[in-house]
Amino acid sequence: MDIRSTLKELCEAFNAHDLDRIMTFFSDDCVLEMPRGNDPWGSRFEGKWNVREALATRFEGLPDVHYGNEQHFVDSDTETGISK
Image 1: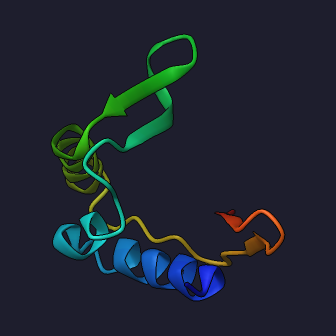
Image 2: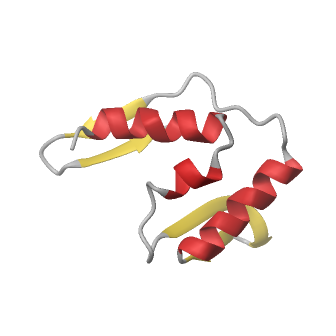
């Protein structure tokens, strides 16, 4: 798997607000942590269905949200990557 390409594709899916495409990048037991929420640490969503619902709500609340100037960082030795 080309991690950098995957991160770019995920970012493109987010910018298109394409939930079906976004969710192909998540496993059934995924976890999404968001910095905003009712708890001091934000919000945590567990499981593919809950993550999808959280993202749907985000797109409804911010219909023009766009993630620009993205940066993708890959550590090939550990086969991990993050996007900023």
